[in-house]
Amino acid sequence: MTKKINKIIRWQICCLIFFISACTQITNNTDTVEGKNKKMAKINQAILTIQKSIQTGDIITRTGNDFTSESLRSLNQRNQTYSHCGIAIIEHDSVFIYHALGGEWNPNQKLMRETFKNFASPAANKKIGVFGIKANTRIHSNIIKTIYELYHKGITFDMDFDLKTDDKMYCAEFVAKSIEIGSYQTIHFPHSQIKKLEFIGVDDIFLHPLCFKKAEISYKL
Image (cartoon, rainbow, N blue to C red; front, side, top):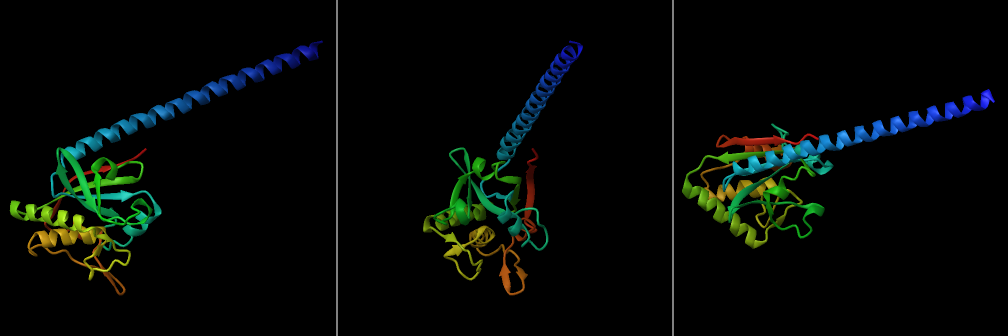
């Protein structure tokens, strides 16, 4: 009889331990979810704040969180912070980023016009930067005109990273050529080189003497 009672008591104790453990686990998971939600709220607020600092003609950079972005960052010869870039244009109080993107994210391979919110999505990126470029109003206006012309031409992504072609462009090439053409060839960007490949890296853009950092945000969940 005593053994039976002890067996029942042990069973009850085990059930109690299991119940307490389960409740603790649920509480911890809830805390984790709540913590992530709070961090996401802070990130979303930071995105809104950084968006307010953007002006038409600003260069917007980002660091993707995928393998392709990591590979592209490695091409930068001086600063490997960012893997992609575009140019911002404010249209009807909304910020759009014009940029050249290839791969599965852009099936038709043509220049993209994307909202800043999508461009800067924390689901696909680790960091965002905003850089201004020192130029007068006339040059800024002509840069925007050039971007619109290239966009309406349907320029496609250059998988060969060939600077000699103007009907296809990759991200840094699009930004550089838009600014060079728009500045009446008064602004030029340096070229990087790896063996026989000559190209313009994202760092060749934002490290230019006429570029200056306006804002930056890192996503950490």
